[in-house]
Image 1 (spheres, rainbow, N blue to C red):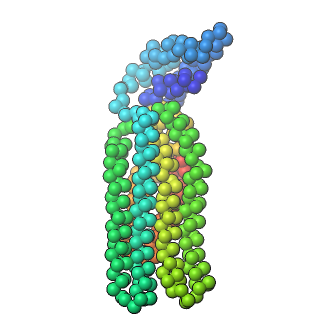
Image 2 (image 1 turned 60 degrees about the vertical axis):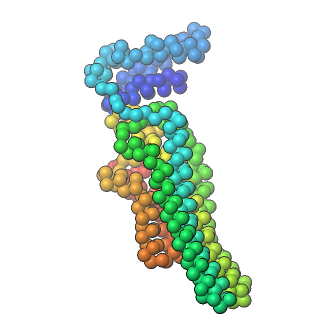
Image 3 (image 1 turned 180 degrees about the vertical axis):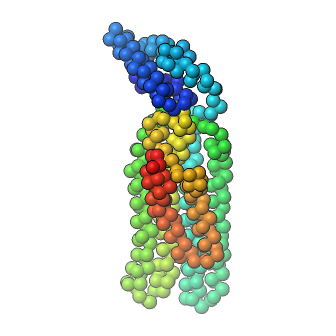
Length: 339
């Protein structure tokens, strides 16, 4: 029956999402189900039964009058909506995952950039040569430049998917169900990665406290060099995990939001559950650009203040407030309709 249900959903996908059309679809599904059961009871195989049902009930133009939707079907124009195949869907998920990892890697490199000045400043104090600090500064700018390069490269990676923003696109019923299952299965992994990332960020201060407590001023290279450096190293790794944790979910949500809510394709149950109806278009645009906005804020504050020891906190804070902010902008009903 899954094959018949998928075929039925495809038949009605481009029709308007009205009570009249929903009633006709339910009526036709009941007729198809009864015929399928009858054929199975007669000893037909499942494939034979499915083939017979589709051949008898698979032409909506012939059935439209008896279902009371002949006017709707006759007025329906051929849609220029691009239906993504499963291969395209998988490629998109892969590319979004790589993009989010690249952005996280860029942030991590920016955090690592501060390790150079800290370590070489400590070494300079120990050997009495202030010029050594210059090496650390050079290393800082090299790592920061590499991080910014990662941000730029992440945008280039997604250039082939710009049509999702510019052209009407959709996914079929079986693909929507597949994405909904994958999103549910990914929840535990996403939560685990996010939790580990937050824990690493929180624990980043531990090396400084431990080295100061154990060694005091006996080993300045540990207390003033390695300890503070570990803050940025741990923060970089933690933020990388936080950003990467939601990569697949963001891809699933984007794909499930493609179907036009005014058509029956937008009434697929998996699509309805994942849909976010924002309070206005500005809110929708803001959330679609959320991480790019966070990135701009991070770079502006970091390069204007050079306070890299604190600016990395922007990323975990942004990750924490994103979900409640999404609830507010969708009328406090995340994934559902706004009140």
